[in-house]
Length: 194
Image: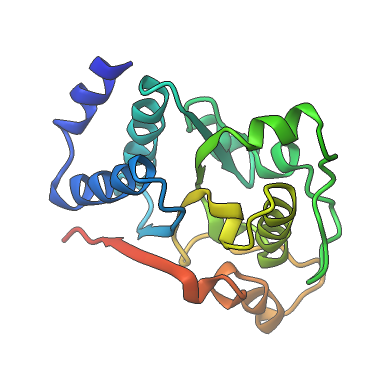
Protein backbone atom coordinates (compact mmCIF):
# COMPACT_ATOMS: atom_id res chain seq x y z
CA UNK A 1 0.00 0.00 0.00
CA UNK A 2 2.84 2.38 0.82
CA UNK A 3 4.32 1.79 -2.67
CA UNK A 4 0.95 2.66 -4.25
CA UNK A 5 0.86 5.89 -2.24
CA UNK A 6 4.39 6.86 -3.30
CA UNK A 7 3.60 6.10 -6.94
CA UNK A 8 0.42 8.23 -6.93
CA UNK A 9 1.88 11.13 -4.93
CA UNK A 10 4.63 11.46 -7.54
CA UNK A 11 1.90 12.19 -10.10
CA UNK A 12 0.33 15.04 -8.07
CA UNK A 13 0.54 18.61 -9.23
CA UNK A 14 1.49 21.30 -6.66
CA UNK A 15 -2.07 21.97 -5.49
CA UNK A 16 -2.83 18.27 -5.06
CA UNK A 17 0.44 17.71 -3.18
CA UNK A 18 -0.34 20.65 -0.89
CA UNK A 19 -3.73 19.20 0.04
CA UNK A 20 -2.23 15.74 0.54
CA UNK A 21 0.46 17.15 2.85
CA UNK A 22 -2.02 19.26 4.87
CA UNK A 23 -4.47 16.38 5.36
CA UNK A 24 -1.77 13.86 6.28
CA UNK A 25 -0.32 16.33 8.81
CA UNK A 26 -3.77 16.71 10.40
CA UNK A 27 -4.21 12.94 10.52
CA UNK A 28 -0.72 12.28 11.92
CA UNK A 29 -1.11 14.98 14.57
CA UNK A 30 -4.71 13.92 15.34
CA UNK A 31 -5.99 17.48 14.94
CA UNK A 32 -9.57 16.70 13.95
CA UNK A 33 -10.12 19.47 11.41
CA UNK A 34 -12.59 19.88 8.55
CA UNK A 35 -11.27 20.39 5.01
CA UNK A 36 -13.23 20.98 1.81
CA UNK A 37 -11.51 20.24 -1.49
CA UNK A 38 -13.29 22.20 -4.24
CA UNK A 39 -12.69 22.03 -7.98
CA UNK A 40 -14.43 21.38 -11.25
CA UNK A 41 -15.28 17.81 -12.23
CA UNK A 42 -12.31 15.83 -13.50
CA UNK A 43 -9.62 17.96 -11.83
CA UNK A 44 -8.39 15.25 -9.49
CA UNK A 45 -10.28 15.45 -6.18
CA UNK A 46 -10.86 11.70 -6.00
CA UNK A 47 -7.33 11.13 -7.34
CA UNK A 48 -6.08 12.87 -4.16
CA UNK A 49 -8.56 11.18 -1.81
CA UNK A 50 -7.60 7.60 -2.66
CA UNK A 51 -3.86 7.99 -1.87
CA UNK A 52 -4.77 9.72 1.41
CA UNK A 53 -6.92 6.74 2.40
CA UNK A 54 -4.17 4.34 1.31
CA UNK A 55 -1.51 6.27 3.27
CA UNK A 56 -3.68 6.12 6.40
CA UNK A 57 -4.25 2.38 5.92
CA UNK A 58 -0.52 1.84 5.33
CA UNK A 59 0.08 3.32 8.80
CA UNK A 60 -2.30 0.76 10.28
CA UNK A 61 -4.96 3.40 10.92
CA UNK A 62 -8.59 3.51 9.78
CA UNK A 63 -9.88 5.80 7.01
CA UNK A 64 -13.56 5.74 6.13
CA UNK A 65 -14.52 6.71 2.56
CA UNK A 66 -18.12 7.70 1.78
CA UNK A 67 -20.15 9.51 -0.86
CA UNK A 68 -23.84 10.38 -1.30
CA UNK A 69 -24.43 7.98 -4.18
CA UNK A 70 -23.33 4.45 -5.03
CA UNK A 71 -21.74 5.63 -8.28
CA UNK A 72 -19.60 8.22 -6.48
CA UNK A 73 -18.75 5.74 -3.71
CA UNK A 74 -17.44 3.22 -6.26
CA UNK A 75 -14.74 5.69 -7.30
CA UNK A 76 -13.32 5.70 -3.77
CA UNK A 77 -11.15 2.78 -2.70
CA UNK A 78 -13.35 0.93 -0.20
CA UNK A 79 -16.07 3.55 -0.58
CA UNK A 80 -19.67 3.15 0.60
CA UNK A 81 -22.66 5.45 0.62
CA UNK A 82 -22.86 7.87 3.54
CA UNK A 83 -26.45 6.78 4.29
CA UNK A 84 -25.58 3.09 4.63
CA UNK A 85 -22.31 3.71 6.48
CA UNK A 86 -23.65 6.15 9.05
CA UNK A 87 -27.24 4.86 9.16
CA UNK A 88 -28.59 8.29 8.20
CA UNK A 89 -32.42 8.32 8.22
CA UNK A 90 -34.08 9.14 4.90
CA UNK A 91 -35.96 12.07 6.43
CA UNK A 92 -33.58 14.51 8.12
CA UNK A 93 -33.98 17.83 9.88
CA UNK A 94 -31.90 20.03 12.19
CA UNK A 95 -32.33 17.60 15.14
CA UNK A 96 -31.75 14.25 13.40
CA UNK A 97 -29.34 11.67 14.80
CA UNK A 98 -28.02 8.67 12.91
CA UNK A 99 -29.25 5.23 13.92
CA UNK A 100 -26.00 3.94 15.42
CA UNK A 101 -26.38 2.10 18.70
CA UNK A 102 -24.00 2.58 21.62
CA UNK A 103 -21.47 -0.29 21.86
CA UNK A 104 -22.45 -1.64 18.43
CA UNK A 105 -19.82 -2.88 15.97
CA UNK A 106 -20.13 0.41 14.05
CA UNK A 107 -19.71 2.43 17.25
CA UNK A 108 -16.52 0.51 18.02
CA UNK A 109 -15.27 1.08 14.46
CA UNK A 110 -15.98 4.82 14.71
CA UNK A 111 -13.71 5.00 17.77
CA UNK A 112 -10.80 3.88 15.57
CA UNK A 113 -11.33 6.19 12.59
CA UNK A 114 -8.75 8.94 12.09
CA UNK A 115 -10.23 10.40 8.89
CA UNK A 116 -13.51 10.44 7.04
CA UNK A 117 -13.23 11.14 3.32
CA UNK A 118 -16.62 12.36 2.09
CA UNK A 119 -16.57 12.83 -1.69
CA UNK A 120 -19.26 14.72 -3.63
CA UNK A 121 -20.39 16.36 -0.38
CA UNK A 122 -22.42 19.13 -2.11
CA UNK A 123 -24.89 16.41 -3.20
CA UNK A 124 -25.62 15.57 0.45
CA UNK A 125 -28.30 17.49 2.36
CA UNK A 126 -26.75 19.69 5.02
CA UNK A 127 -28.94 18.05 7.67
CA UNK A 128 -27.51 14.62 6.79
CA UNK A 129 -23.96 15.93 7.29
CA UNK A 130 -25.01 17.64 10.52
CA UNK A 131 -26.71 14.43 11.72
CA UNK A 132 -23.41 12.56 11.33
CA UNK A 133 -21.60 15.35 13.18
CA UNK A 134 -24.17 15.33 16.00
CA UNK A 135 -24.06 11.53 16.28
CA UNK A 136 -20.25 11.34 16.35
CA UNK A 137 -20.04 14.04 19.03
CA UNK A 138 -22.47 12.00 21.13
CA UNK A 139 -20.98 8.54 20.53
CA UNK A 140 -17.36 9.63 20.91
CA UNK A 141 -18.10 11.89 23.90
CA UNK A 142 -16.21 14.75 22.28
CA UNK A 143 -18.04 18.02 21.63
CA UNK A 144 -15.92 19.18 18.70
CA UNK A 145 -16.84 18.78 15.03
CA UNK A 146 -17.30 15.11 14.09
CA UNK A 147 -16.15 14.04 17.55
CA UNK A 148 -12.57 15.09 16.77
CA UNK A 149 -12.21 13.04 13.58
CA UNK A 150 -10.55 14.81 10.64
CA UNK A 151 -13.01 15.07 7.72
CA UNK A 152 -11.99 15.70 4.12
CA UNK A 153 -14.99 16.77 2.06
CA UNK A 154 -14.68 16.93 -1.71
CA UNK A 155 -16.97 18.30 -4.38
CA UNK A 156 -18.09 21.04 -6.70
CA UNK A 157 -21.08 23.31 -6.12
CA UNK A 158 -21.57 23.67 -9.88
CA UNK A 159 -22.54 20.02 -10.16
CA UNK A 160 -25.50 18.22 -8.55
CA UNK A 161 -26.85 19.77 -5.34
CA UNK A 162 -29.11 17.96 -2.84
CA UNK A 163 -32.37 16.70 -4.28
CA UNK A 164 -35.36 18.35 -2.64
CA UNK A 165 -38.62 16.72 -3.81
CA UNK A 166 -40.79 19.41 -5.38
CA UNK A 167 -38.32 21.98 -4.07
CA UNK A 168 -37.60 25.25 -5.79
CA UNK A 169 -34.18 26.76 -6.45
CA UNK A 170 -34.03 28.57 -3.10
CA UNK A 171 -34.91 25.40 -1.15
CA UNK A 172 -32.25 23.41 -3.01
CA UNK A 173 -29.56 26.01 -2.39
CA UNK A 174 -30.61 26.34 1.28
CA UNK A 175 -30.17 22.55 1.73
CA UNK A 176 -26.55 22.66 0.57
CA UNK A 177 -23.66 21.96 2.95
CA UNK A 178 -22.30 25.49 2.50
CA UNK A 179 -25.52 26.83 4.07
CA UNK A 180 -25.17 24.56 7.11
CA UNK A 181 -23.93 25.21 10.62
CA UNK A 182 -20.55 23.51 10.03
CA UNK A 183 -19.49 25.53 6.99
CA UNK A 184 -17.74 28.28 8.97
CA UNK A 185 -15.49 25.61 10.55
CA UNK A 186 -14.32 24.17 7.21
CA UNK A 187 -10.99 25.13 5.60
CA UNK A 188 -11.41 25.31 1.81
CA UNK A 189 -8.80 24.34 -0.79
CA UNK A 190 -9.34 24.95 -4.51
CA UNK A 191 -7.92 23.20 -7.54
CA UNK A 192 -7.97 25.59 -10.47
CA UNK A 193 -6.79 24.55 -13.91
CA UNK A 194 -6.64 26.80 -16.97
